[in-house]
Image 1 (cartoon, rainbow, N blue to C red):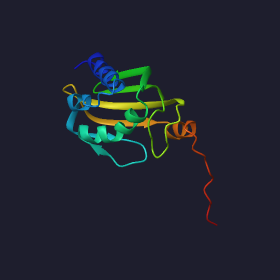
Image 2: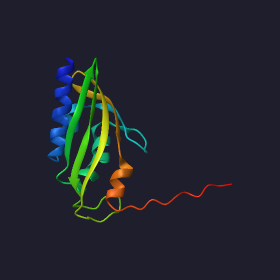
Image 3: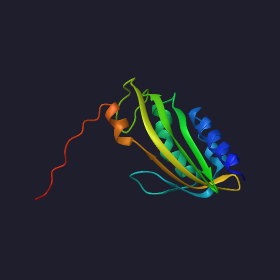
Length: 143
């Protein structure tokens, strides 16, 4: 597949996720795809992706990915952008606040035969949690 074909796969994927359609992962992810998310263990296949992302879609039903950059070369696509949404459902123990949030993120996707076979997802989780009212407390340093 061409670089443009691979970019179209990523665009379609995020459009469907923004509609709340996490089943798009079944269509676009290989069953043995490895998803690497920050701060956690690697997740396998479409079910792993859905498990990680479902809380976002539930808590932010108007979730919207805005791509500022999408670069493709060979079997990889890098998508950089902003995610916006309204906090209308519980998220990581935080009751709905009604706040509009915005955070940035980068996804690197490796694609073969029209499906994700590996993906690295990084986003500003700390910035998101601060927008929801999480307080930062300095960690005590052992002497």
